[in-house]
Image (cartoon, rainbow, N blue to C red; front, top):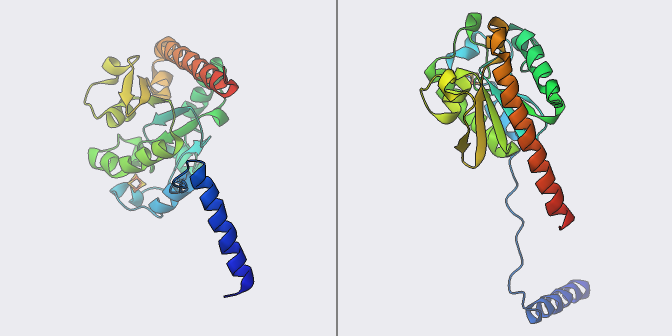
Length: 227
Ligand code: SF4
């Protein structure tokens, strides 16, 4: 054996003996690499798992902070989103940005996605098979991001995430638990464009979310501070 290799092995042995003497019996293995949003996107590829692929221009995956504490989940891309490949960039998206800003949140801080990633033709409602086909990818996005709060925007997002058939008018403003993530359904910004008198309720929900975010940040700070 090469004397240098033998020297390294001897060093390693003495190091392990030293660790054993210190009471350390096993070395930790690095945990299996955590998935990433890039990996989820690449798993989707040129997705054809439901018929929405036939009419889409772009698969709108989602965007924002991969480590966001707050995730916003909408229904599906509209015309502008399909053209630009980004979620919530049309009129409803502009309203969502304003709603976030009204509670001092910027889009870059949160993660925004939809339950179906391809535009339903003529903005029709997504069908249950389409939602079921796309749901695993939304759940994978949630697994990667590990948000503390999900705001479900509108009926389809709330029903799909919570696996319920209750209407948004019943679900709105209530708080649910999804595997440890706090889920709060509220009205979709597109609904608010048609029903501006309901904005106040969404604003109340957003103020609640902003308060939770401040509490999470404060507890993370005190944990990091050691106090
Ligand atoms: S909506 Fe989802 S499941 Fe259907 S084709 Fe698009 S990415 Fe695939």
